[in-house]
Amino acid sequence: APLQALIFDSVYNSYRGVETYFRVFNGEIKKGQRVKFMATEKIYNADEVGTLKLTQVAKQSIKAGDVGYLITGVKTASEIKVGDTITNVENPTKERIDGFENVKPMVFAGIYPVDTEEYEELRSSMEKLQLNDASLVFIPESSAVLGFGFRCGFLGMLHLEIIQERLEREFDMTVITTVPNVSYHAFTNKNPDTILLVNNPSDLPEPSKLNRVEEPFIKATIITKSDFVGPVMSLCIEKRGLVTNQTYLTPERVELTFDMPLAEIVFDFYDRLKTVSKGYASFDYHPIGLKESKLVRVDILLNGTSVDALSSLIHTDNAYNIGKRMCEKLRQLIPRQQFDIPIQAAIGAKIISRETIKALRKDVTAKCYGGDISRKRKLLEKQKKGKKRMRQVGNVEIPQEAFMAVLKLND
Image 1: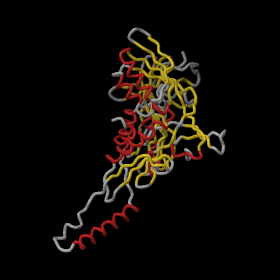
Image 2: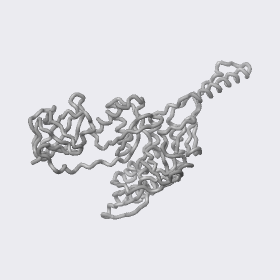
Image 3: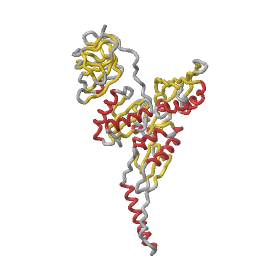
Image 4: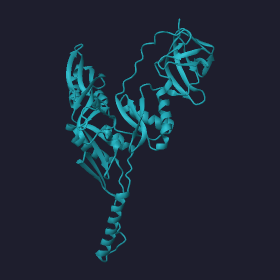
């Protein structure tokens, strides 16, 4: 029978390249044989095959039913995919092994290195993470404030935090994670028929130049226990969902179908669905095209400077509320400086919310004991001028928690 082996895991070895772990379903894999990875159509020599015991034990061949490892000298981590089928070049199988689906990402966010020079190092780290986490997807992108980084797809907020933690622990990478969003179609007043693809909120034209915005919608299917239908429906309607169908599969289980914007599921929808259903809800979705929506870009200004990594596209009805909550959350998380820091949420040129982080106060009059008030006033005036100058040139450092807090406004 032709060789059919399923890849279930892989690890990166800096000396030997990618070590692939597989199970043989049909045929056998021999040392020195030419093998093909069916997903990527790449052909390699099986430099070493063997079984996994306490250590790796090299063998001449691995037969059907056995689990083993394969070393082909591959150095590019992205060429090996978990769930792929390995076959023989001389006598290839026509069918891949079923059972592995490409996982759909639920949350999309940007990951950037704190030091822009570490971009290539971050790419290499992400590829190595992808070796044993097939659900992680990423493509390069850039930001005006943060430089070059990656737009990544995750299964949920927990997955996002795990990837960030693994980057820090396993690869010693300090990264910044941005607000999640999706891809939109914008149309300007000047060219109302030309599609302007908006992957980053900062690419959206000013409200005065904007004709309309279309956002991707999905058909969401949720299966839950009948006890939780009320809370699940309330959550979906809050997320701008429209109920299209409700079917009782059994007296205990209900299938609910909604049309809803993809942007609403990338924030915290999946986690909140699990919370309101006490874990008894499954969620699946597929895209159904784009629909026109009343969306606005909410910018966050720190000390008068817009931070594009904190910008987000939000429905007009929710813009004021979310802008206000973002300002309040950032005020709690950004450390105090020697000068007042205004935090503002803006739509175009219009400020919709403002919070102020009060300055750390140094008592410059402490050394004055009694005496003329004019001496104290002179010192206070001098301090005031210094604070004003500091505010003009001072940079506000934004901690990683501030970027992450925007994702958890309901906490």
